[in-house]
Image (cartoon, rainbow, N blue to C red; front, side, top):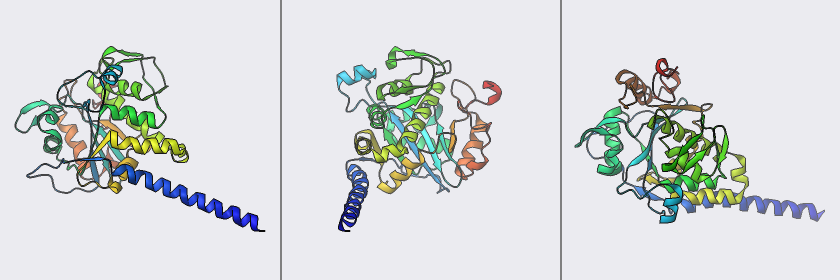
Length: 321
């Protein structure tokens, strides 16, 4: 009779240790994450319902060796700009992940009308946040930044992702050569897929679609039960965070966890993924349609966003068909 009780005790001990492991690993990883000042001084939009996160993928080569830069096709760019700009809104309705093409023409305070990715180069996160808030009227509550090497680390940490290019893609500048159709991609391939802009007739707009596809695919792998049940994958994923991500000052581990959870619910079934409404491939925002989209986000009425407004490219369906 003692043996079943002994086994039960050992089972309880193992379960307790597992719970401790699941809690301790992300807490430990959080202590190593960099914090970035992102809130601009001066007048800003008032508080709004829901939460809006700014996700920035910078082209920083920090942390990449010369060999890694060559292997990933990232070059040796001077300065730092934003290859990826996305707004993630969460609230009472479905989550919305909206890409802001880096070539979007907007007014950057103190620098006139130019491509939005220059805001980061001119004044870092604070100027980018001010530019976006001025242009959209949406208050940005939290900030998340990922570098080029971070994409590779996260994708590899979850064991790779599935990508589904609609055409074969060959881009020497992104070290990318993949066939058409759904396929498994490791970190370096996913990075090339997210960076390539020379394999699509719509350039930066097509790249933004690929970036959202990569984000959604990573999200699906993160919420997979195997991520929690496999201690090695769980450890790798959590420990990739300090080398991959920086969060805005004031963001605590709970808010970071809420952001990570929200990013797993943007894949079409659980949320909406869109391009900012644009008028043309020169990436001028469509004045009327973009204002409608921004109003839905500001008022946390994502349930009411029509399919005609939330399109993959940002162009109206009357143009793309």
